[in-house]
Image: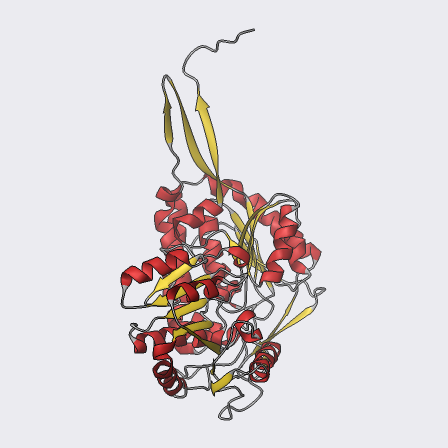
Length: 487
């Protein structure tokens, strides 16, 4: 099984190779097989990509919003036409089941190009401000060269979520995917060129932890958008702040999902499973602290155990498979170490907790795992695991659970399941998070802003709000009379 691209990087409209860069082996997580070998960007590759972006950006910014939008919408159409091919590549890249990638990965990327291609004219409008005889107006202008740094859980989606608003606003982008999932972004770059995007505006370079600083610290870069961990976010934000660059940080979380005793239990269980086991638990917004009101705890756990143990683990390319492997061996080891901590610290293992015995080869599989009787001070309740591990905690009343839910440095997401919508709105209003759900979980359509608060980051992706983070206001005062000075 091979997925070798033409070359490691895509710069100025074509594939580019520099074998002086260190080797990056792309592994298929279901088997551990090497499916592609690429090279990390050398400083020369970084310079070449940024130079191409800088050269191409002014002419792109001068185009009308409608003309820019037409190209983005054409890219969306191509992505939808090739959804199966892109989904299979995403499964090879990440190990996520094809039944997921075919509905959630390239499709959401296509949605992003379509949305920003359609709203760009309205989203980039300014204001007219009357000032008596004089007046002023504002306009939104692009920032210039933007850098996107992606994570490995949704590589194609993230490449589009960052690229679409950046391009719509008139910027150029240099995108660096995770070294664990280097393949999908190259195809996105190909498709954009095919859709008519001028060369140099969307460049993809491979790299590791040494590549990011070369991009972030480059004097020609105006903005950095990162999806990653909190420690990485702190480093990138600090480096960008040193040169007063614009930043968007979409970081990790330890999000609460609260189930009140009047909730529809099957819906709440379904939401908790989607918020912990989808993409093998490798989703930053996952509701990994599931607070269940004590009265319905036993019913919730019984139904949860039954449904979790029915999940189909296996070959990600089999459309019946519901749970695939972790993205890497190291990630599996990390998750298993957290499971061991949960057992050691006294949590009750309800189901899972090991490596499934129905898969062959060297795949990085972990059973969907549920711990009950988890307390707030346990390691598994405080730290982001980023794997299929659900922590169920008991609570008694509303004020208590709100205080406990907020007792974390993170603030990415939160959810509430209740039949009392008044309570649902009241509770989410007090939860310290950027993206919240009532009676559902982890739905992120492109029309709504997505992002966090506290240590989970700042800035927003998707919706018209994203255009604000890829542009800045320019204000013009127009004097209509003679200038009178007192001297």
